[in-house]
Each structure stands twice: as C-alpha cells, then as structure tokens.
Image (cartoon, rainbow, N blue to C red; front, side, top):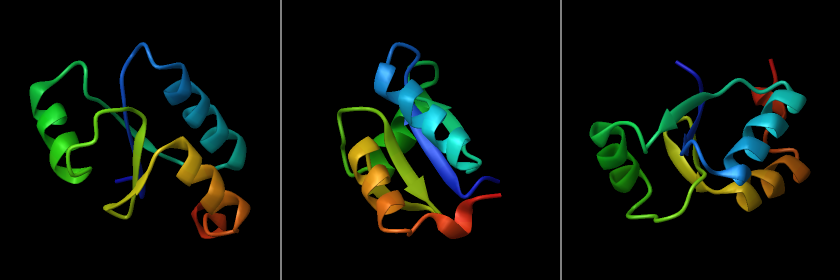
Length: 84
C-alpha cells in the first residue's frame, strides 16, 4: 500500500497537478476517487474530518491537507524520505 493517498475526483485540475508533482518528485501514491464510489466518499469524509474540497492527501494514514500543504511539506524537505 502506498504511503501517500490522494482523495480526488475526475474533474479536478488541482488533483491532476498534485499527481503530476508527486510523479515529478518520484513519490508513489494511491488515488482514491471519491466521485466513483460511495465507500470511498465515506472514507474521505471520515479521514479528512468532513473536508469538502479535493484533493486531500494523507501520508502514512495521517491527513495533511491539500495541494498547498503538500507543497509546503516538500519545500521544508519533509517528503524527502518518500521519494522512491
């Protein structure tokens, strides 16, 4: 199982940008499409404490937030150990 999970939808340009950045950084991820599956949507709401926007990201099961928070972690070097 990937350490990074991205909760996304199929029509979200920021989700696409997030996935592209993770790929550029060499960080593997698992995408969870909340628009395709009710169980995934329920998981999303529970994990993110009711977030209403995508993308939302978890690392090792801990919710970190969205695109902005991910890029801040990257700038701080906090994602360096995730690169494969």
